[in-house]
Image (cartoon, rainbow, N blue to C red; front, side, top):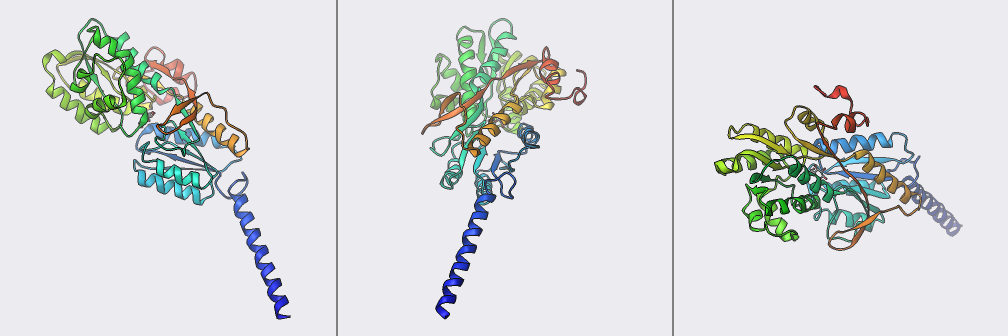
Length: 371
Ligand code: BGC
């Protein structure tokens, strides 16, 4: 009798354990369940670029049957790892992540892989790990090439002082942007159109059409902004203080993105020996669109985040549905060739700002003055 009860209670408990596990499992996959199926981790809320991505994800997901959660890492790899762990605990099946530091993020995505999660690198590649399944990105080499081409097309004469600035060395994109820019600028430095004003390392390498990553690192070591507008101001001030009269006048400035472009532009505008400047940017941040309308920033490279979000979510949904996502090429991350989907970029300046950003309904005209 006692024995029979024990068997029945064992079966009873076993039934509940199985039922409980089944419930947990379904809550992590089903769209209508309480778990989170897609986790999204973005680098920082301090830059409008990434707040823009958050909003575009929210817009795209408004009617989705899948549950998602977006967390920000605030420029910290430790916080990023914590975010990934939080999402793993919520049972995600797909992780979309734009790393703060491409190499340091390896540990976070390796933890995700161990949990059976599919990892999609978003805009920034995660390097030196095999724990990345897919990469959705803009054509970052084309971004740098477009910035450089704009400087070439909009400066006159020869011996134009050229100020170089770059992104953070912890971001693989900073190298791609610089590589693209160098491919266009180097021949124009070699033929005397430009003279480099602010980097002895770049001057030492100016005869080389193609640079290795180590060579680019040396230049970035001198001209990085770390993607930080304040660091950009400090560097620009230091460079202007050190520059002789032959490096002033009408100048060209390669600024890597909009946030740093505005602060570098303000610093150059405040120098009485600078008579005019052409300056680049990227991201089509609202503040920079206003700067372009006002003639304070020359151009930006518009990266339509709506497309990137659609591609990333399309991939995630394919994975959740058991399908293989479509890719258009691969990116070498130092360890593996990561399957990638790439999107084109558009150069925007005063001439086409209305057409590309207002008529395309990316922004509303009422958000700007003097359009
Ligand atoms: C992104 C840029 C952004 C920069 C700074 C890069 O990886 O591609 O759009 O401006 O990071 O956040």
